[in-house]
Image (tube, rainbow, N blue to C red; front, side, top):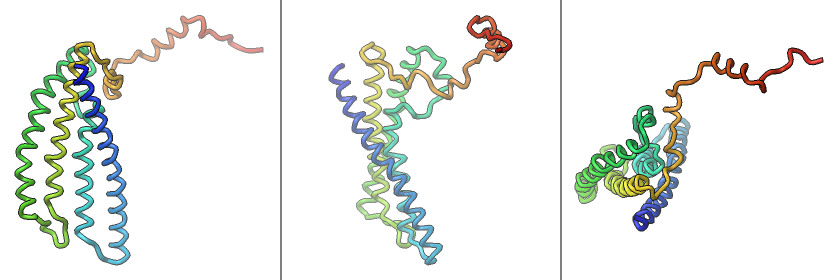
Length: 209
């Protein structure tokens, strides 16, 4: 298990570096969008290549940062219910979910999207829009991203098994979630005030001379 955990750490480090790098593409996309809008307003001209580059960049961020999101445990789940489960049940759900859903889904998408990319690459598929960009680089993002997601899923599975075996501490960010905290019953304010009244330390003189 120690060797597998070492592999998991390497995967996590690579995923984090990739995620942090592609996150900057959001800034690039914003600059391109602003520049394209300014040029269109000032010079009444534009380019489909610049417009398509924006969704290229968005696709890269969305797809290539997804494994990093998984590593940070920020992926979507029903947190309000998940936080109410005992720890052993949460870990069991994670293992079942990764084994039966995440990994098979990622593998199927890689398997089916690779011929989709290859066919586009071999025919040098171009954009249907005049002056647009080639289509195959964007299509390559699909098998690439889901391959990385599959590898990150293996890393998460290794860590979850190690946690259940007591060989790895559960990350602190999994102990609580803001969405779940909002649903927790709160003590009424009147009860809190009553408790404070009973506390001799909360008693203050009526007036100060």
